[in-house]
Length: 117
Length: 107
View 1 (cartoon, rainbow over the protein chains, first blue to last red):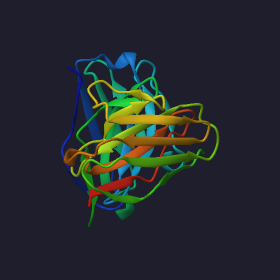
View 2 (cartoon, rainbow over the protein chains, first blue to last red):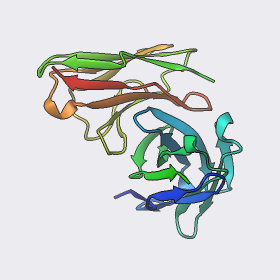
View 3 (cartoon, rainbow over the protein chains, first blue to last red):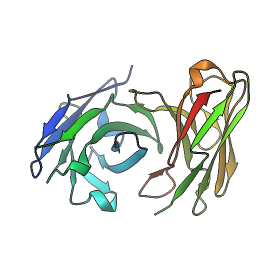
View 4 (cartoon, rainbow over the protein chains, first blue to last red):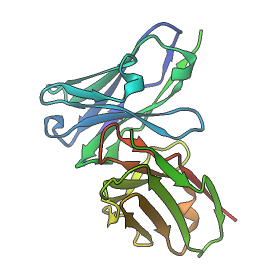
């Protein structure tokens, strides 16, 4: 059974960074792409970017190019996303998702990031 | 970027009713479209991929159709467990984009 287990809730101060993790079990992440999506309180879903864990290649949505950094560790089968220069607008739930030819059949449970001083 | 316009934003329907949610892309996405259901406090769950293929384990009362720039999700015989938000997503071209969502409630 494929499972994506995300790290716990984060409270970050404005201007700082946080690093979220997404550990995959039941599937080798070298054989897929890992994506990150956010959802601001009461809002819709927003695609942030994706990483190819096999070679580290990344694609980002334009607005997240200087905000998010995606990495992956194939030895631990874990994907990571670092969010930098946190602002109140970054308060959201962040989901990792595993791609299956374009669509997302598997999602993590989400990590709530709250930005507050 | 491809814009996904989803309608309606909210919908109220009765048990047993058939509901339809629409998604319009700003350009042809060649059936590169998925539909998700999200219940409060939960992750999105895949319902439909490739515009009209039912994901494993999804009840057959859900169906997807469309082509080009116009797509729809239909729920036949609405059940209480279908109360949720629904999102479309295009994966034809990067950056992948989602519709704004439809909140489905019981009348």
